[in-house]
Image (cartoon, rainbow, N blue to C red):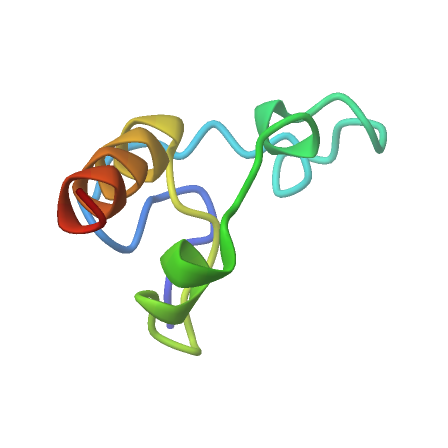
Length: 66
């Protein structure tokens, strides 16, 4: 069973406000943009990834589309 507070990609704290029980709209991911291409790279069983991994995936995607 995955720990919902850990990023499934890097294993670090994903700082998920939803998993921590914070009110809706207060998690960093509520304002983040998750491109479809990024979501397709994640395993279907993935819990919240961390902001650093999201940024890294977005950078990699930009490099691939150049």
